[in-house]
Image 1 (spheres, rainbow, N blue to C red):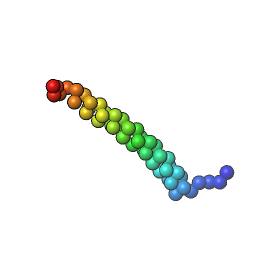
Image 2: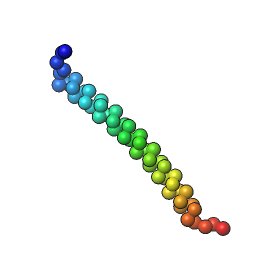
Image 3: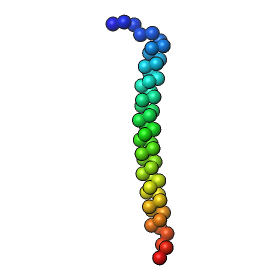
Image 4: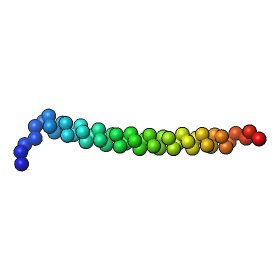
Length: 50
């Protein structure tokens, strides 16, 4: 097994971190959109236009 250079290890580590952060960002966007939809629905239900 060959020895990894420091640059290669740093690149692999950064790529792994970016992959995890993009997944975290997608989950944050998904939950944020659900929270926004829920806030709009509950906001419109709390106002009684009739």
